Amino acid sequence: MAISELAFERARSFSVAAMTTQTWIITGATRGLGRALAESALAAGDNVVAAVRRSERVADLETKYPNTFQAVRFDARDTGGATALVQTAIDRFGQLDVLVNNAGRAVVGAIEEVGDEQLRELMELHLFGPAALVRAALPAMRERGTGTIVQMSSQGGRQSFPGVAAYSASKFALEGWSESLAGEVAGFGIRVMLVEPSRFRTGFNEDGVLEFAEPSETYRDVLARVRADMAGADGRQEGDPVRAADIIVSLVHGDDVPLRLPLGSEAVERLTRAYRRDLEGVERWAETARSADFADVPPSSRPI
Image (cartoon, rainbow, N blue to C red; front, top):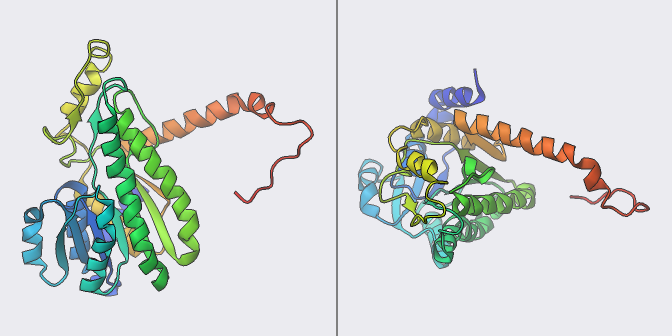
């Protein structure tokens, strides 16, 4: 049985009574993986603060879980509102155990087609917003000596391809930032998990959600297949958000979380190929690379 299948079965067989109640903040919880995560955590007996732009879209959860769910109007790009959001969770439920930076979107277009404003907006959504929330959450987690930060990245956060440079740039940035974070906070009992999904049946590819830059004559044919593939994926993605959410909740409640969790068969296969390609590149050019060092300086013994 594959690791993901084991985790899923573990999640389904968990005894709620045996689980320690945790308090979550989840951004972008109105649909897709964010919504599925909120439902899975609530079903496990946890408390959830859903940070969403349109709270009416999660009104049903507030009705179903009046004692353990709270919706807060929040724009994930609003770095100034991060501290208040964290304080809301602590005031309502007494603690903060899990922060999930999930809100996200994509822009499809060639590098020459995507402008500064679109690129900055993705960076604000995928890097600056999550960074502000993490900074706001860390003091409370450090004080209690426990906590889990879940950064929803993408298979596009470890590899990229034509047409998604802006999206991948923001996710690559999130991954590098989070890898450093993981080393800084491990000694305080705080864990960091980067989730790298492939295609899941969420609203990500819906018309009006997925943004396409105005195509230029130069790249119209070059990116025609990419645009068609991205536009036609909605409703046909192989990933099940409910299964994915159960796996994540199971891992958060467990004793160990991976720094990186490829999620979905496509992510496993594509990232495996990407790692092997990169390793082959390092090995091919290793001697050339080593020749750049001073001949009389021994190899570094630095702590990192």
